[in-house]
Length: 175
Image (cartoon, rainbow, N blue to C red):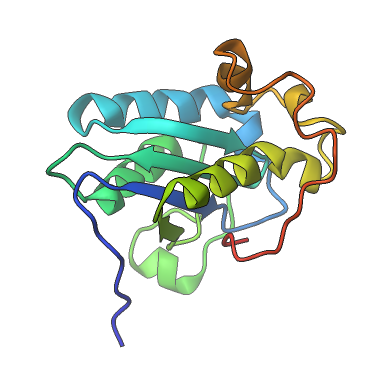
């Protein structure tokens, strides 16, 4: 059975992208390398980052693609490979990864969800911004440095104390 992804040209998508070894903290240890990988890919394959959060072992994002484009898979592949090439080899690799000359940094797949409407969009943005609290990294969402929440606060979209109340996480977000 072949996995089928939902593709909507010019659509907005929610993603969860995870390290292969969830005990590693590569994403926050090397956050500047991740930023550079994203910036490099955006130069040739533009997209808008609506919301983003980087945790030690996974990240969540909402992207909006250009009007006639639905190829987020290539973008993620390029981001993951660009980031991986900058990390000194040493991670564990399965026989399958060795036979395909693949690094063992990322899980091969990622979770994606096509944003359906404004309510869906808002729920996913809130989930992204609350995720560091959910995972016990901080007590308040605005304390986490690797989050687009700071742009939302700076632009007056939300208050700095947003997320101090309990966020209702009913699951279903790809973690």
